[in-house]
Length: 188
Image 1: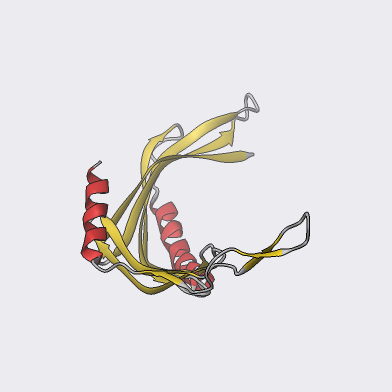
Image 2: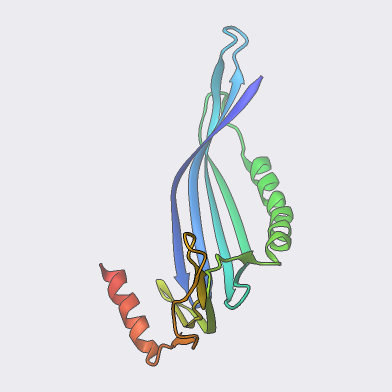
């Protein structure tokens, strides 16, 4: 009998014009059954790290979607300690890197249809512009709100007009202001 325990450490993300990258770190412990005590005991421990780079694209409108394309996935393992002697993790690292060659195409095929973003009643986004900067991303979009024309009064069953039926549109006239606001928020 054996077992594996994984403890995840910090996850870091970096945003720049080439894409979004991240790094996850953790410790993986392998346990084996001690034949003398029938208890699980630590066989060896490895440090594990995975670096990931993803391209991001977004389409806003009636059906808002976000697309992710995994560009690279680089796993790395290093022996931290062993209770069964000096062992090589090269086979484990080879297996992990082979798994990467299966995982990246699978993830990209899963993500190729995009991930739907939440929809809001009576609100539509258009004129979308998305750019990655160093340490942050900028989103410019026009928001169009078309109010519902009538609502029912549940008590009397009468209809009331709530708004002028004209469409209200909010456009960012100076998109550089949004970038400045995001930079200020980044400093806080």
